[in-house]
Length: 344
Ligand SMILES: Nc1nc2c(ncn2[C@@H]2O[C@H](COP(=O)(O)OP(=O)(O)OP(=O)(O)O)[C@@H](O)[C@H]2O)c(=O)[nH]1
Ligand SMILES: [Mg+2]
Image 1 (cartoon, rainbow, N blue to C red):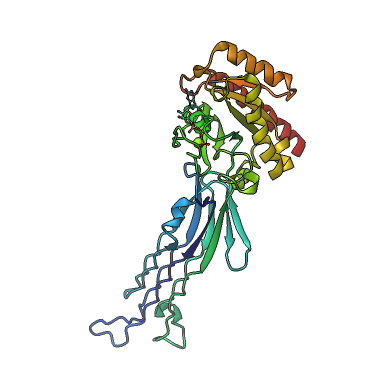
Image 2 (image 1 turned 45 degrees about the vertical axis):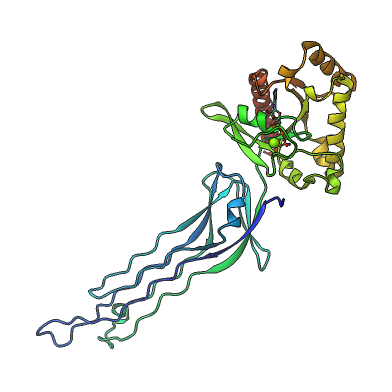
């Protein structure tokens, strides 16, 4: 299964409406002057960022986008209507390139941001516009011009604050489904998630953060085993990683850290920078194991010297989620303040 984080589409602005050639024809007026109106402008094509869209997958089915043409001008100096713009919705974090020249046309990072990708054609002028003192009955008018057209390559880098990481089946999608508005597929088999997706975690009316759920990693992923590590690039811009461990997968607390080390190895093969990113351990599926097992697991993770905060949750009976959400939020606020202070 190919991971869709790239799409190529064809965009074309609408044609400008033609100007009109027309003269006044009225009884008893021998030489009614020109009255041909201008055409209307062709529609522009824009890309518009929308945080509710997560992938470029829809562009596999629809590739061509053409804005409407401007209407032609008509007699009695009537101007043709300009065509409305065509808005193509893309996820936040989309980069748009000209496919022929490879030039970066622009990036759409913020919800609602718009990028002009094909200008509509210009209106043609009616013959009225060519009237002058020396030519009172011009037969000249112009046609509307064609709209710009080009092939775009869209690339998506998800813009998430927090990335979920872990072996398949540990409960990444379950976690994002109970802390955010995301509704991913969840099932009791590996590789349920085939594409990264985003969820918005609401803390308050104007306080929220974005979490990315990605497919599970297995040993050898950096060599292409399983779904590979290609989607790890979507975690590059996150600030914090939550590394999920399935408490119920091993009877022995010592074996649980293998889940950590396997994924960590793939991460470090992929990128040093990603491996060094702040990371917290989230022990999931607490409802399936004894309190003793949880205690042993916590102790074990502390003993091996990872020096990371450890959280214990259950996505099924929703325990530990509130604390996790608020701690992440507080950490992010501090991190952002720190970064802003650094940048200014
Ligand atoms: N009992 C229990 N089951 C859980 C919990 N979290 C997840 N599960 C179950 O574990 C299985 C895998 O969950 P997913 O959320 O699909 O796991 P994932 O990590 O997204 O898996 P991939 O997408 O394949 O990498 C499902 O059957 C879930 O119902 C939990 O806290 N408790
Ligand atoms: Mg999943």
